[in-house]
Image (tube, rainbow, N blue to C red):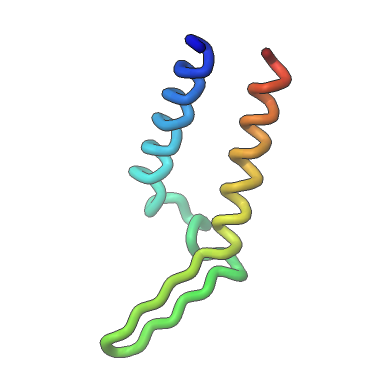
Length: 69
């Protein structure tokens, strides 16, 4: 239980840092496949590719943590 809480805390800290420094990461949110529609009075943004890339990175991190147990 203790390891799980520590790992969860570290993942949340990493996610918080990613969200804080996310706009300064050059490619995050501007990858090919991210849908952005901007018109007067309308702004739609769907980060498909960024979401898939983030999901793969988190899955690899959690797989690595599970292998180290």
